Length: 173
Image (cartoon, rainbow, N blue to C red; front, side):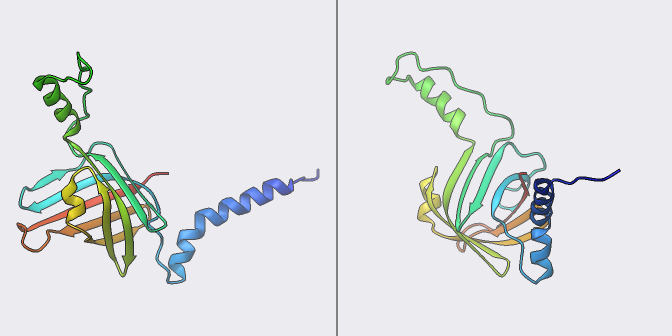
């Protein structure tokens, strides 16, 4: 009995092997693995001012690509509910405005540029849901990448109440 292996199958296997060992090879050569890709928040711990522990955060996506990042998350403690349609389009009542506010209040969103050097991740927001995120400028986090887990630890800016935020992200595959 002879075994026939198609060249396409060999090529596909080689590509798969190269893709799955790329990060391990980079680490073995002394190069750090990349944070580029898509991530979701899987744990949030904040100590100091306004402490919080959330081991089951709501949906989020953070994307790092070619020096740019984008992050959108539901920072609330439960899934959002849609507000009812406005009865008179373009003329919402105060109650309808409040319902829209409640729907969008837990959403956090920002995008900008990033640089990762020596375990320090510096993000500079260019656009954000909250203007203060952009006007505050760049912020730095300690970054630790272990396999498909990225832990970002951010300390409060000078002049702000003492606070340390540790966010764990897991790579989305």
